[in-house]
Length: 112
View 1 (spheres, helix red, strand yellow):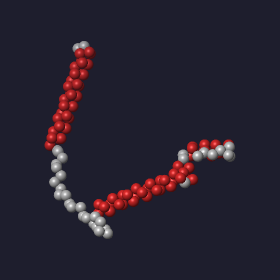
View 2 (cartoon, rainbow, N blue to C red):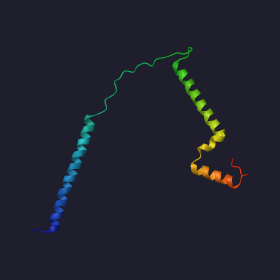
View 3 (spheres, rainbow, N blue to C red):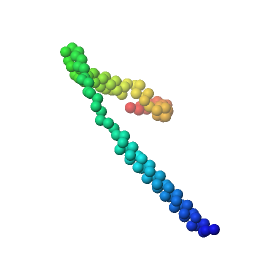
View 4 (tube, helix red, strand yellow):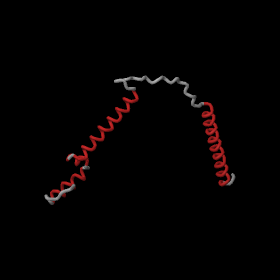
């Protein structure tokens, strides 16, 4: 019977060869798949964008007007929420607890 150390090294060497062989095979397979399967260029015809006119204005002008209107409405809503007394609703329950506790300790205290 041979030395156990020689047997262990032989088994480890064969295992490493099999491992690196499998890794090389998988790498080659992935390389071949990427070489064979490529993204084909999109040969789709571009369809013209329909121009819808409302009140004699082109569609892109109307879209810009709509975007500006939405932005103004959101800005107005956010500014009105910042000034309203309901702004405290945005506090976490922990923050509300401490605010009410502070106001309860000194009724004349004000938190701006």
